[in-house]
Image (cartoon, rainbow over all chains, first blue to last red; front, side, top):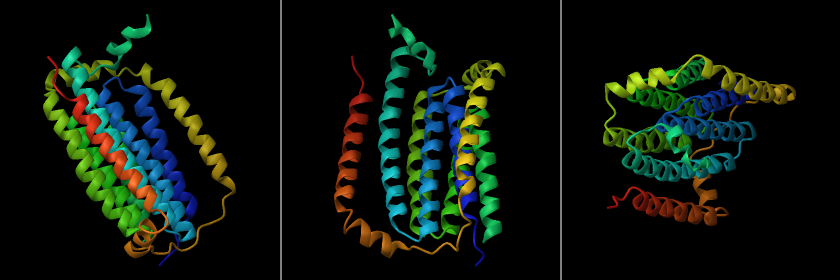
Length: 102
Length: 162
């Protein structure tokens, strides 16, 4: 088995993280924002797995499991909020929610 | 193995780009599933079969089904695609892309001095499980409490009020 350059995995994780950041900053649809947050969480999980493979430890995979749990809980709460927002404002535009600025 | 790694990496990057520029929300979700599956392949190549399975089952399976369910509930039709197209102006992309590019440059700069990789050692289900239910059992309990809190919060937030 050929060895995989360690930093290439980390570079892939950073590229995915940056793409997710672009999505969070650019989109106005809140469902897309939540999806971009998922991309960012997944990229950080990938970084943990790459580090676990580099040092041959299982701890990185355990951290990935924690990130997975966090992502599942976050998505459940976020989607509940989206449903409530759609019921109240009939839209998925996050700019509508800026009415609290005074 | 190394070809598979680069192939899956390219697929992950391309489909992630497709997610953030897509106007049809269901198509974006399918691209996101493709991206997550490609990342699962990368996990497998890196010697983490347990994480790869969980990525495919929990991320690409359960979480994405949750997204699909909510999108179906919101019932976003053709008018939202047009609306989405009008929201995505070219000008709005410039500043976020520059900022994310700066962040990426920072990442690459930090990673410049890292030594080259060794062969990925295969860490199977047994090693992970022994650690999970040994020294990290408190973390597992806390994760289950977090999931329970997420369940209660999602039920409470999505409840219909009169």
